[in-house]
Length: 155
Image 1 (cartoon, one colour):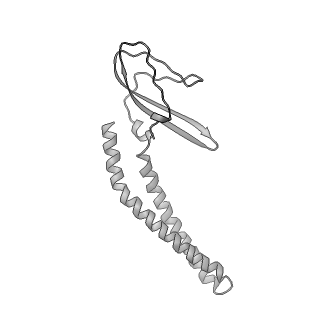
Image 2: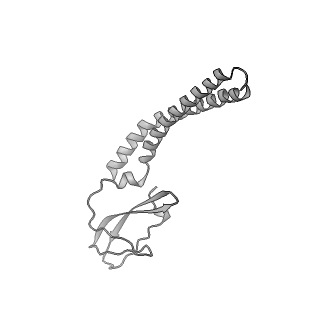
């Protein structure tokens, strides 16, 4: 987990200024597009071909920069979520599914364990993904409850 944190920190540090620069450039091009296209609409009957072309060019420049920003932004946020931290983990000692109420149980000998859990659900056309990573210390008590909730959700 520490190695994942160090990797994420290094990548995020590298991507932050790129993300900020692209956002600023995208915002500037959006303003330029709005001004040029507003003029084009205002003077539609006078020199309309030249202004329409400028508007189209401004739109194209804006969308190109915006897509570039979105690509970097998506990479940036991929290092902030649970999927990155839980990917590439060692093979689990046990893998189980919850029952219809979301409960699960398994037996472990005394010791300290990393409990990693993943869940998903369909919401409209998209899928929400959830990740938990909780340290659990098993003592002699044969029954121990661990609550996975929004409070310990890995976001």
